[in-house]
Image 1: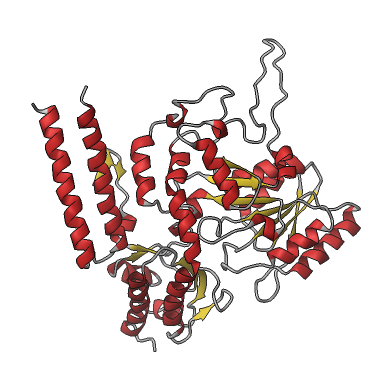
Image 2: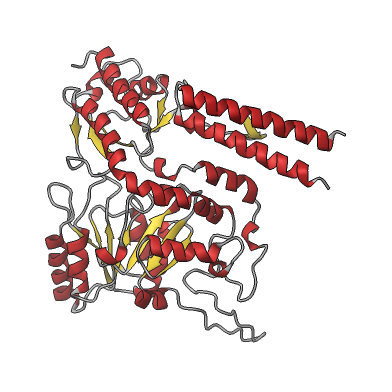
Length: 60
Length: 390
């Protein structure tokens, strides 16, 4: 059992959900302002971290 | 993109500004989407259901507390979650309406109110709207008098929509509730277009029941809703079962008859709960929503021939428009006929209107950012200009 992998899968999906909401708030052009770009960048960084953790846990 | 072999992923709100009149208040918050991911399995909320085994008494997740919070939010005494406002209507109607009973609703009532009366054999009687499409307290009092004369008894129930689904007009709820109270008629406040987007105070309104729609105005999955009651009425509509099986002798604890036991046993309830903090916050910003609505109204009115059929100034974001003398004139000669308007809006990333409608139609600007409201307003004007409308 990998609780870490489970947590990371959920966390990654939640982070993607935050991006989904950003897509909704900026529809239809999806042009992000500076603050939104910064937020999106942080979210994407966190998603990469979670995916790396899932890889480490499940593909070891 | 598919989420199952025969099922497309729905990405309407990611790609378009959605102005569908019934959808916008029910779009999920980020937290609700996350809750849906985590709690989507069938009876997910029942992991920790303990005796007396009733949904509204589950402590983990905090469903019991949520019920208390819902009642407080609406300034009522008790609340239950229900599978849509219509099931709330049905529960109350099932409690008070007997075969042949006169029941009042209005000329702008939602069809589910009629069905909730019909299922119990009641006789639906409409309080007429006035020329401005408003249900007045005077009209309600007159209709009550008429029923008293004709049926020799008061109506067993009165339904009143605070804002109706056809025009988004506000009706004289306070005066209507008062007229009903004077004749001991229980009042159902239909808040499908208020509860969750606008502040609602049931006690201040003087109503017996407040009913809201989760999927219409509380950023929750369908079917979901809330039925809140005063203490006196709660004991009636939330009465518990007295049934006893004749062969097995089984009884069924404290399950509530009109609720048919537990109601929202999974993702619908969890979605409501996850959105609730945001819903409580957003109702305080109704003025912002009306300001965005005005941006679009002003743009539509700048197009010659366009009329707003809803009351003005607007008190709601749901608006009925008559473009018979503007966009419909173009439709008569356009190669796409009436579909040109939908098509032109879609090309600009705006969706949610009825395809082909160019005469009388509705839209709802709820939940837009100001930027999206301005964009939508500009799109209407641009489409008008491109098609030769002044």
